[in-house]
Length: 191
Image (cartoon, rainbow, N blue to C red; front, side, top):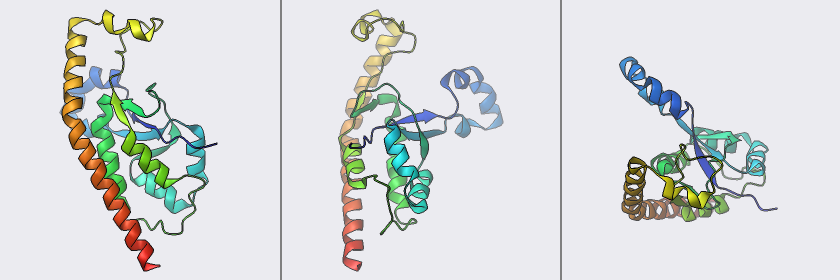
């Protein structure tokens, strides 16, 4: 069975706590801790593959901002919540930077296919998720019409921001993929 490489951003501190205590955290200078996020794969088999990989592979993913647990935001396959776009871009930057400090040449990836993972990252697209205040038993297609004016405005703003960032994201992903291909090419030539 092929592994699925979709991942979601998991906030170390729940948003409800962040909202309730944000001014207190600001006073203490703990805003970075308040917003810290980890990337987590949705598929338990993908996480298990990483757990069986060599320690250098696990260290690479941990240092890049991944956790070795699962979390599912509810986004469909190949999609991720639009609100996580900036955090995902940071994770991708970390993956690129950490290739220099982690020697993955010849490492056992435990069934984790790095090439498929990169393809998955490049093909993933943002999706606007339904508001948490929507009735949980309401059918998904009925939720958008039940939005308040404020939620509808937020949704429209998120869509516009997502479209503006789509071009930048595609350039960044292209640069990442090109950089990784060049690194692997040079490493292959050195063998």
